[in-house]
Image 1 (cartoon, one colour):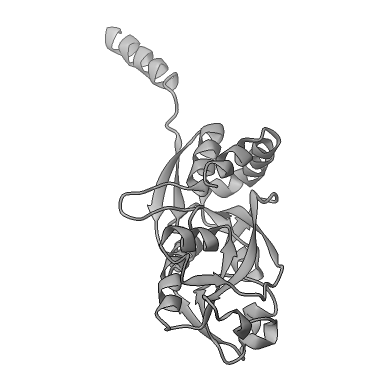
Image 2 (cartoon, rainbow, N blue to C red; image 1 turned 120 degrees about the horizontal axis):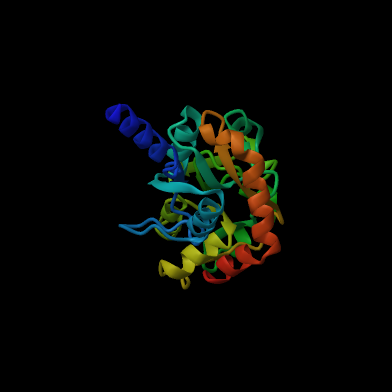
Amino acid sequence: MKILTAILFLSLCLNFLPAKAQEVHFALNHWPPFGLTEGDQEAGIDIDIGREIAKRMQFTLNVRKCPFKRCLTEMEVGLLDLQAGIARNEERAKYMHYAETPYHHVSVVFHVRKGEGERLTRYEDLRGLRIGAVAKSHYFDPFNHDENLIKIEVPEEKQLPAMLAAGRIDTYVGTNPNASYDVLTRGFKDRLELAPYQPEADVPVYFAISRKSPLISRIDELNQVIISLHEEGVIEEIVAKYR
């Protein structure tokens, strides 16, 4: 009888133990100032917002640093649960569910070598130029689907300023504020400049959940948290830290 009583008591105690927090694997690629991943670094706008979301949704954030293309692949197969810095397109929507509310916007820009701005003053000038771009990135139409352009794709945007300065490409497409942040912080301010042609494409960026993740059942909750972060000014405070 004493043994049975002890077992029942232990069972009741276990029922009152706090449940283990859900573990969420979060993709972080190097995309300053949104993602800063060099060396042991795990910083940037995306990870700061991600940690705030994790706190409010009461899950544990397990950060996985990866190049952008690999992050997408791991989201597709379900090795990753959550990713930020994602522009909407139909291909990605097949394997990830976007929060309805974007957390930020970026603008598409082109950089050229200092003094070579006249080479790129309109979209048509892109033809014949070697254009650096990040593999699997979604920029703007018609650029995204223009098969007449010479696109030199790389895993990460941080490679592009050095390639342009060395003459391996003629221009590269990126998004601000991160493209100009890279030029400034990597020592290319005196060697590269914004091209006169800018497509004026404003691109919303989102948090998205892999459709193979258990977290998918909480997509509406994620969206509501992002709305709250906007309304409370939390996202603006985080972004301001990196200006």
